[in-house]
Length: 385
Image (cartoon, rainbow, N blue to C red; front, side, top):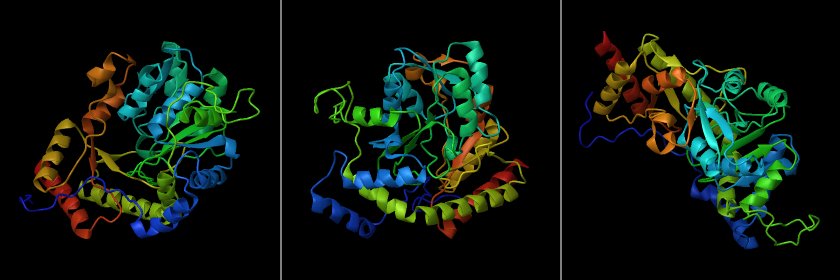
């Protein structure tokens, strides 16, 4: 199959944002109160729903403008010494590292498990034997959840705070009764989209409240804090979620369970069919002890080698199919980050960077679009034999 000039390309991702008519009741409520930001009633309602889901008091939850600022502010709220070493996977999106740098710390890039593609407590223990580590920031790679009991045990044993970058894992990553801190993204491409937004969930006493204060410039709003209301308690930024984004988040929450089931079913069908067409030459991310993804937002597979990935990319390009090399280049291969980071041995991350390929995956994929993806994989297999 060759893509003609007039053929529409199959996109990699299509945001699952609520239709305008579904937003209207929320927007009308917002407009009736004339409250558009500064922790308005819709933000509070959204946070209350999250608190119930995570079985935490309201003090353990706060929304933010986006997950990247959430990570930065959590690091600031932890009050680590300037220049602290924060361990994170080399195999992740740039925002994990830039949040560490912008918070005034040094990213230490570690390897990932070759099967789950996650930075695990075992890898973190090994890193702690090799150099000083002051905090750990595991990532829920492509939405795969972590075992929070294991991370809570690591935190207790080592005395090192753990902050999980759970950007892509809303609905999959839970605390399951363990202690921990999670930062989720509500970006338009995530399973619970608010257009832009983030969510901080923490059992660490006072942490979410501190992040909330920092997201409002660092202004004190607590009359019992021993500081005048309106005075600056610390140097923060403006990272509040607006009522507009909360309205979208609430509308998305109304349909989340239904859409999560659809995502999971579509993902399972595509994995099964692509594996069959490829004669089981594809390797898929495997769940770790933290369990399975409940609402996948991407489909990403490991090819036998780098040349195989190039061949499939070319086949997809000819068919008008968008692909993505996740994650290439690795963090240590980006000149802007290289000078900011410390690097450990990362053979598994490097192999994944050479061989992973993301294919189109989104709710509403037409039969014709999925068939084009399948046909491209079939032709790739035929050309490889």
